[in-house]
Image (tube, rainbow, N blue to C red):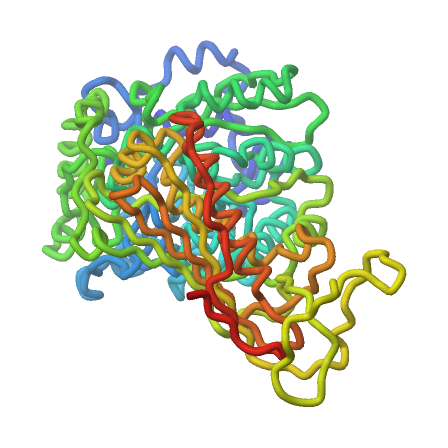
Length: 617
């Protein structure tokens, strides 16, 4: 193994604010018996001019020096983000083919000796690896390693962070794409919003500053939350990093989904014209901005619109031991195989150096992808798509008051299902809630006639929401028995041929109209009592919203069903759900045509309650 590069020694001298003895304790005077390093009296330009070259093994043919290593600890993840992987997950590498802890540390030690001074642990989800704390502690012992970071989805962060900090973790990136709990569960297909919030606050509490929050921005999904994310930086030491949506293999890439850096910046400047740009750090991937008076800052990762390939200093090691010199490239070389074949450090360095030397100038080939041909989907997705959205446990506003003091919050979710192809003869959507959903979730109901002893009551000839003097009044349902209540309502949106075709092919500029309408209908069912003044709160056990395209009428047919067990019915929930889903569909299509008609909003059926069942014929 070659001696440690002189440039490493010189860089450490340049970086040192104080000197240290062999014990690691900072001192201002030389250690006993240790000669004074005269070079400290030299001016900094002299040292920089005469510094030895960076390690040749980690310098590519374009002169880029790779001092930053990302190591994937696992392929596994405890979420199923829709832009990252299919719901059923991905095929996993056999455990025997993954790097062992010792192999990870051996490679890390080798790279650090050659000049790497920053290592970030990634996944999958790195915090599900059982020995992650031990790995951090071992990395901390490597001389010359300045930064140990981790990128996590935050689910396990609050529990593990105190141990990780003690072990030596110095930087945290937390992935969070929405501040709306229901949308979070839609995107990641799992619960966990509150755990992520808890993790972010734990990081702040333990003194990490800034805490970096990574948000992948996708049109039709979360670009409406940009201002809410930025508002969080007013009172919290966050670096909210908006990442341009990038083409990974599982993404089903569509350029229309990308929101560019400049578009995002324009949105922010309209709200905060005083937004100021911060100086860019060397080899940084982020363009940083700050609003005067705010504690935190905002950054943009412009991988697609303004790539940073020219200053890239990153290398990656996958969980199975492959070295990737470019995140977007397919070229990999197995360091694991060489390790297990008994390769010496010199031999490993030659392999690494050859791979780094082949690194391309930029990932330009990605931009040659056809933008007019979204990839085909498996047949199982063409006919039906079921999206499960789980209700959040308390009202969104109360969550934000508790979790984000002083932070702005979005008032209405806009969500787009991303897995749809371009040529769907007929698209069917349905979504339902778990039957064990939290009963505290707000969802309202309908007026009921006074209780009777037994048997169904005829329709009343009196209005039940007015008192004897004609003033409005809420029906008292406190003495009514709990019964199983089910209601179904429907609506029709007459779209016209142009809007119909765009929806059918999922080509609307604003995103997936059917998925947005679907989620809007679910949200509306749960919020009916906040929209209809005299409706009661009820705990819905089930909400289902289905949308079907009717080619003969160029229409979307919406059916919403609600179920609950309680003293009052759920027909208002079903009607509100269908009506708001129709309104959301109109909103998605109004730029294409305003000749859209919302029609036939009606109750289809209801069961349960003292007035008996109703079925429209």
